[in-house]
Amino acid sequence: MEIKKISIAEKMSQFSDYWNPRIVGELNGQHIKLVKAKGEFEWHKHDNEDEMFLVIKGEFNMELRNKRIPITEGEFIIIPKGIEHRPVVKNEVEIMLFEPATTISTGGNEKSELTQKRTEWI
Amino acid sequence: MEIKKISIAEKMSQFSDYWNPRIVGELNGQHIKLVKAKGEFEWHKHDNEDEMFLVIKGEFNMELRNKRIPITEGEFIIIPKGIEHRPVVKNEVEIMLFEPATTISTGGNEKSELTQKRTEWI
Image 1: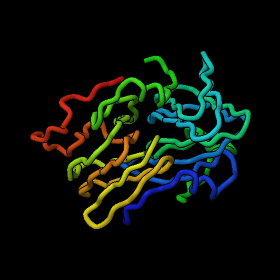
Image 2 (image 1 turned 60 degrees about the vertical axis):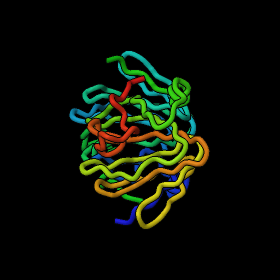
Image 3 (image 1 turned 90 degrees about the horizontal axis):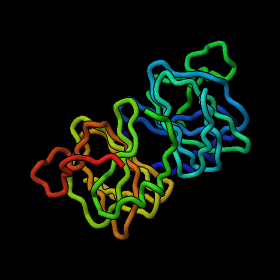
Image 4 (image 1 turned 90 degrees about the vertical axis):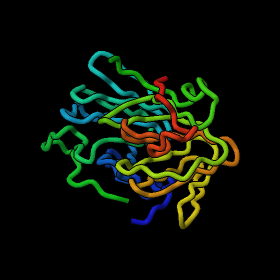
């Protein structure tokens, strides 16, 4: 595979839908994904995967069962496996995600409409 | 461990030396590191680890044996395992690194002065 740099802004310009992460890189079995989001996601957890959220543009609240953490541009948070969480987004936010290639966004809840059927590379 | 957000700028403000990555997060056996750099690093490769460089501030050139790739703020590059590379930095740059917790910056060249003895968490 050719080695080339990736522009986050250029990749972000390729889509506009919410809660639909795109894969933009892979290393050591981990995927780098970009997602745009607005509104409330659903409560979920990942039994086997830690997940990192890095805010590229805008801000959002990461809700845990016992607190709410506001996260803005240039900040990130790591949600350890097994911890219930729910992103809540007032205005559109752009986020970079780091997670194992096996991760399903809703934590494996196949009945959810928010579960992507197959994550797309861009 | 308490779950809390991390500010990249706040962590960057805690150190000023070059080529000395600090660990700021861990997930799925991967470390998130921040590094400041200026000047030329040395040619090296990592036999078993892919490595990601995300530019937070400034710009640098990633030299490969057959090309030179300029990388600026908001861009990243993934160097697959086994590929020789050398970062060359004209003016100070701030970079976020993603790599397995096992990675040694110089690719395991213990004789290099650039090899950190032990990577510090901040």
